[in-house]
Amino acid sequence: MSRPAPIPPRPGRGAQAARMAEILRVDHAGELAAVAIYRGQRAVMAANRDPGIAETLAEMEAHEAAHLARFDELLTQHQVRPTLMAPAWRLAGFALGAATALMGEKAAHACTEAVETVIEDHYARQIEELEADPSGPGAGLTPELSAFRDDELAHRDAAIEKGALEAPGYPVLAAVIRAGCRAAIKISEKI
Image (tube, rainbow, N blue to C red; front, side, top):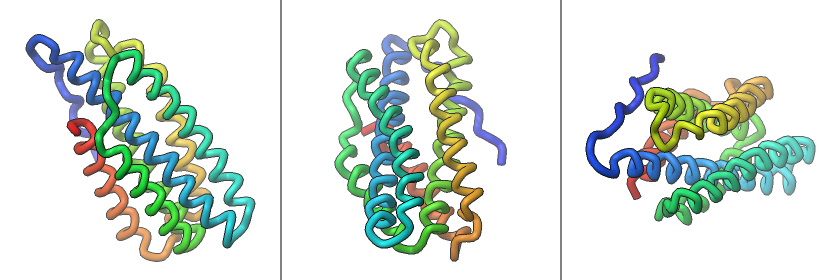
């Protein structure tokens, strides 16, 4: 599947700052939701299943928490408010993580694979956009976004290795999760 073209720079006074605010807001929201998903999965897996998987999930959660902490700093630095949807995303993320973990380990991995696939694509488009405007306000952000994208790719690849694609109903489960992620991205940029 080909990636859509990056968003061209907006014309007008304050347009670059507004776009930067959207980028930071949506990335913060995504990391917040990712932490919640892993917490939901870990809560179920630690209580009912193999504690080894809970340890793996805790490690992935720690990566996402580090990303979230950095976006907390960036929001403050750039004076950008977080999405108003943060409480809903936190709850939805935890519920998604817990629900997929209750469906079994492979479904939990399918959730990770679906989410991380969307997030990797999202980061890649942002990186292309920021690199296209090397003098813009987000130009210095591309190395961090690239590192975060690499973490997301590692999580996706680990989930595939652990059987994500073998989850019962994988095509439907992954499609629904990906659609939800894409919708959350659009909402979080604006609200």
